[in-house]
Picture 1 (cartoon, rainbow, N blue to C red):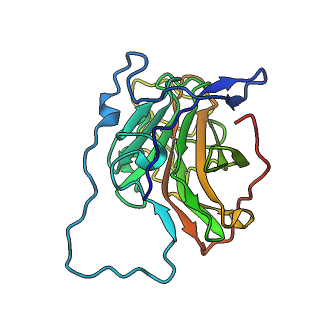
Picture 2: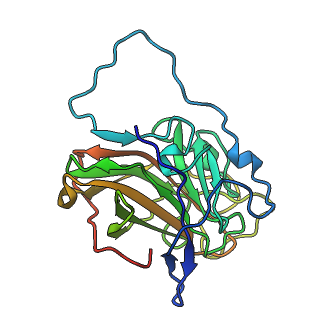
Picture 3: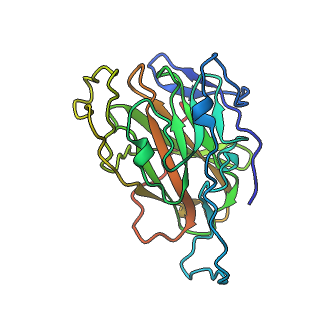
Length: 269
């Protein structure tokens, strides 16, 4: 599977408050503001399983190309290591089941598709201008659909998700706004937290479990092209660095009909 060099991105705010990806800046995974990020970056379990001795046979409906993030790195998201803090404080993480990586309670009980998943988070301080960005390796569009599984900490009241389809040279081919899906997950407040007036359902006590939600997007217009997918997330609610998790990002023929369609390139991304 091809690997990318670390993703370089610059995000700026337009006058209307939307975000613009304009040029390149270093995103090297170092601590950019003296914030203690140690627990988030811990690798923990690798998710490896024992060899059963049985030969592996590819199923007939297996995807042609798939990213599952089980290698415990961010190589398939455009970075080195398992954690990166971007220049604006936004976070990108390879997370494992049972890991706590958010200020709210509950993510440690979530089930990913495997043992690991990709997580995008706004900055520790929850700055609206901090945009978490991940870019896949290049792949050839040799199947009609691209799909992935996602789950966000809160719904669209608190988060913005969108994506670009890029040419191999980075040129923007198409854009799409993504639905923000919680899969029923409702986190819980720690005892020392203040209530969130925008989210009255988030309370003290136990969190509510959730399940990852599949998204499918039609790729037929780009058949035969070599492309890459870029995902973006940022918070809507200042001082709250919510997360979104992604897993099993695959190209093939999905069982579900495509619920998403690419639109024209959006230069505000």
